[in-house]
Length: 626
Image (cartoon, rainbow, N blue to C red; front, side, top):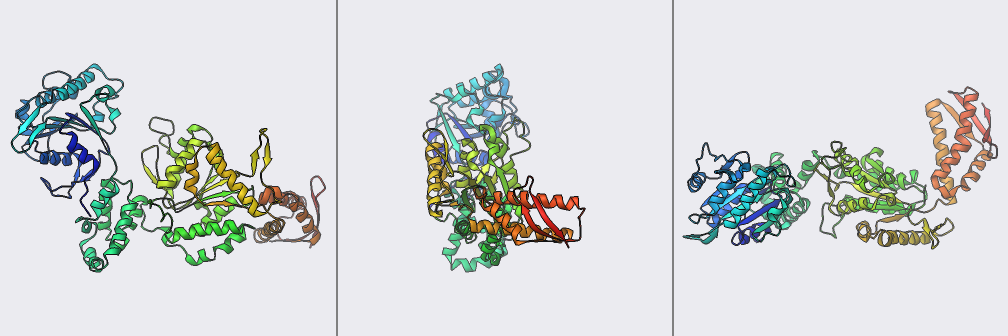
């Protein structure tokens, strides 16, 4: 590929010729790959200070010196520069430093005074790079007089900076460079509406920069010598396969700093990872583990998963099929292939439909099938996040606020178990500002918590549940049913999806959230009579089984009693499976518990329920003990 020079490097070359004061902000603590052949070998990985030294040296600057408030003036990149600067500034260097206090204001040999003297001379082209400027003062909005004086002198120094004619590089402008995390860490009056200032932002490495690092002579350094020697013979003859691996690695490192990518390089080498597995090292770096549960799934269990679902979720064939399609797409690595991001969650599902139809149970069943443990489904009740500040509960409070140390409930859950299902129950009850947070998660698969740590969602499945579309509000502000159990599933599905689209597009004004979810809206059907009977039988059989295994009580239910249960269950279908559970609790569990207690039957018995009186208050059982 062609050599790529970063935007900020090109801007630095352009504006150093016309602006005496340059502020570098953003990703300033990172390392960078030097893009050109010059005073340092092309492709060298350098800290920003070293990078700037060689960059300005290659431009032709004769004096290059750095300053911070702890060490004073220095240059540890190459010998001789500090001594030359000391002569130019008429100061004395001791043990590799020129001590100077930043808050000395206009005093002789203060840091600001030395800067002014050296920038105003025209003998030698000079660059002074002031590092860690964010730490020079306590607060940019509350400066004491000495701090105001120091920044004022720096401002004067930039205005007085001279052009210097050099023998080999033409005219160069004496230059002051400030390195800060954010430009607003220094007084706004220092740089706002100042035509002599250029602010240059250093961002995370672009795709082109990451390509320049990976698809270059540096690539062999990602691997142990014997590993690369073993693998390279094959990939020399299969360049297209190698490029696919490199492209995937480049895509998965989106948002990584050069320092992190260099850490991946060392980790890959230390762990003796083979070329075909180099992308796996990203999981080790992100999560601290080598094994990715997604790659060790029991595929036979997934093939038979529909049976497992049907044992727990009744009458939702379409929902189960659609859910399994998303999972199979994740397992085969097909998720997001039509887009540019490789870091999105493994899958996104939006479960909609009447209450009690199995939405939450489907999510729990999925966690059991995929990860062997229902607890891997992390549920968040979004009714708890209805306030605008609730995002702090999810993602963590910012520094200085109560709860900062605790972190966020969501980010903590993902950090503790990155391979999980995240269930956001009744998403419509969350505050709209929280929905905005999901945009980044769904698109980029990562989020920065309140403590500044990046949390990755790329190994999760995200499931939203909602009752949207079941009821709507008419022109008089009254709530009325939008769908009923008398409608066909096809009609229910169309009406619910339309109501969901109206909610996000018209009511919330957030169509982009709906776009991230795409066609993964799964509408659950009402519990139909045949399904209700299956659910009822399942719950009754579970009671019989548990009594037998835990208390050695054999329970049988006569047909007449079962008919009474069934009639009551079928009269309560509006509440779905939960309604059937309530009927079982009211007509069977409660009166049976009363009967067992009153007759002191705690273990080892055989009981037949001959009839259930559902009209009695409370309901009663007619039982016979064998």
